[in-house]
Length: 260
Image 1 (cartoon, rainbow, N blue to C red):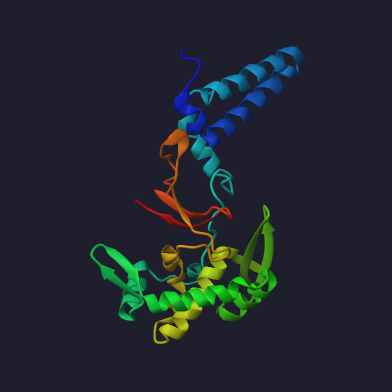
Image 2: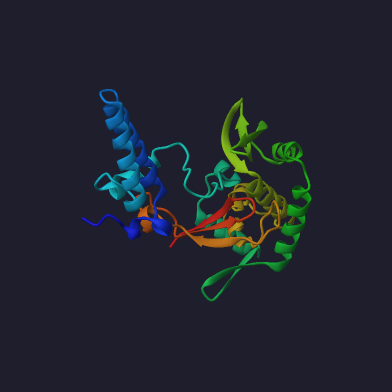
């Protein structure tokens, strides 16, 4: 048996596998320590050493660790989630959204790409600029005034990042990060002015796919980066992760996900 496994350590280390194994090693060490503290300490030290040099110590870890981690309410091993979307408020399918945007001239088609109308893009940029200058509370008020079916917007702090909880009758239903809130509310306002005849449900649902055209972070204006999503131990894992994600390296927020 090889002691070192570089394919599972260093840059290839899978954090879910590592954490799961360290937790299991800790449980085993505590159980043994009840009978013999020195032996328990030895079990913990040897187990931690194996996890460090091999990536994991429990056989078949790459098969079960990602599934186990996926049951958690949050995933601590990826960039901050782009959270929800204003599009969650309306159940309009993607084909209807694309058809509506195309009919209004908001998007076009060039060979195998979907393009965004430059005039719309400029107006959207100005809307995001105005929203960017607002405080969190003021932005929450703007969200509450601009959305049908939302009675209140609560400002939360999650792991040092702002989230807006959009709810009705005291029950939050949709959570937005600050970059997503700026991008989508700006898009919604721009659509309202640029395409007033567009179905309101389509306008709201379009806010999510329009995020895919962003090149700079709506919250800080830093250039966005596209990064490959690595799954378990350097490969894709059973959680059906997207092929890539568009993130703001400064805000540490994910703005969009790209499928294969």
